Image (tube, rainbow, N blue to C red; front, side, top):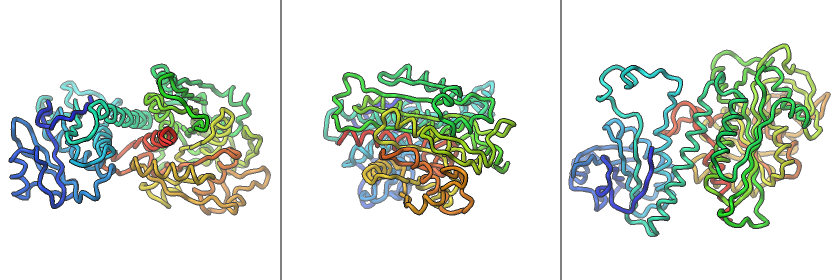
Length: 503
């Protein structure tokens, strides 16, 4: 989809369909034709949130969307409203859609409209056969509704500021939303296609096209040479080669000067491309969803790429641990003891608690590479779904300032987080009997927090945060993502990086 912006009213654009927002207790915007006012007078067009109505005037479709009370309009409600508009516009046959930013709304709302439309426009159909007529179903292709918009125009005629500033803001919003959709593509790919090696190859190809971004991918031998025994133990049951993916971003010359006190940001992602549970085999029901166990890694890779494309003035190191977790004669066994890269020993009492083993060594590597603030993302525990559902991701951290930045970034992007406590009493739960740590304590207490407490052992004194995204990575249920992969975390991480640059 092509995305552009203009300070012209929607009627003066090339759009075939123009969207007008209606607020409770307010008349339609002055630039709307009389046909829109007639819809409102007839009660067919309403201001209740997401209510839709369609009319024709001046040779164009005019689609109204209810925005509710003006005081309640937020970027997140803009995303949700845009997704409702997107579905109705496609049904009506729209190809070029113009969203008119509500008068007086901030640029954050305008960005939300663009993000919601691009995210709603996503489809994953690379593995579906194409019918001979290309329509995706029975009937004449010429009569089928389009599956995607060809062009999205954001109109903001009343905005203060230059046309160039508007275009830059909207282009950046579109670029970040496309990065989310790229992460969704990675998540949705089946595990026989997206192997650890394939993910590494993807990262190499991605970095080759982006200025300032470099990548290194290493396999099993490197894990052993680096003493990454926890990561290597998870990988040893699969015939697939694991991949330690390290992306580095150094801002290009034109990105601006980096103040000496601006920290190097570290992102760490779990990318278990298929998780059977290993010897501690998962139940068969819904095991197919375990292709999504690489969602943290997908978010980190695409966030790193987006940060580099935006040329943000900060340094970044991203570490992604990619492997399969499968049962075989070589698999790590319950009761085995492994040693992580920082020397700590771990009793592997449940091989299905493998994500924390992979992350342990990846966190050590991020610290070694100079990361001064670290955020890891992982589909780590089912317990976080019990606690928070799909609305929030679980946040655990050793640093209050970092916690505040992540919470603010989540509020801005709609990828909201809820902080869970890390208390020294939880450390008692993960003490090993035969080794320093136990990866899966028998006491079924505070399962999500225990995962965070375990990971805290591998960052030393570095400010660090862990995001458990097991409830948010797929089937999120938000209007603009729906079923399947959500790409959760990409926008949050980009916004977090921006917060350091705006300081």
